[in-house]
Structures are given as C-alpha cells and as structure tokens.
Length: 104
Image 1 (cartoon, one colour):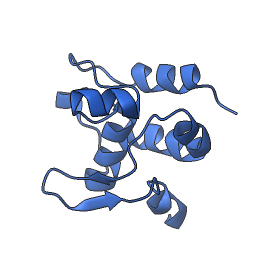
Image 2 (cartoon, rainbow, N blue to C red):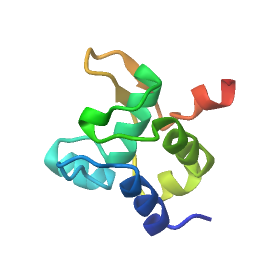
Image 3 (cartoon, rainbow, N blue to C red):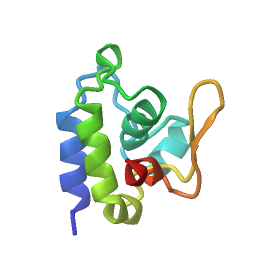
Image 4 (tube, rainbow, N blue to C red):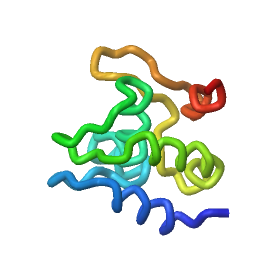
C-alpha cells in the first residue's frame, strides 16, 4: 500500500503553484480550501488538461496515480467526500472520484 508521504510527495512534485493547498481533508475543512489531491482530480474531471497558471502540471498522470492508489488516498484522508467545479456542477460523490477513470 502506498504511504501518505509517498502520495503527498508525488502530488507536490507535480504542483508548481505559489499557494500551499491543504494536504488532508481535515486541513481543507479548517481552511475552507480544496486538498491538493482534489485540485488535480477536479481539474482532470472538469477540463482534462494541465493548469499551468494554477501550478497543476501532469494532471492526467496525477489523476491516474490517485485512481490507482485510491484506497490509500481515502485511508489517509487526502481528498474530500464530494467534489464539484466552480459552477457547482458535481464531479464526484461518496469518494467515487475514480469512476470516470474506470470507464476509459
């Protein structure tokens, strides 16, 4: 099983933004921000592209990695239960962010 540290290291290696996004769901709740994992998943499910202006690179690769390591991501509380885009359109529910990945 992939460790929390390995997942965070992978996420941070593909993030070049100036902000410091929350790394855990709990930290995201405290700061009312998305976790770094959620930022990548939201970007892939919404636009399927990198977002260099937001510091998100290799978005497809990161999304695939998070899907492949879903159980560890959930066990370590690295992503929110539900995700939606900036317009309020739901992207996933009940931690099922990998449904799109499975359909490809």
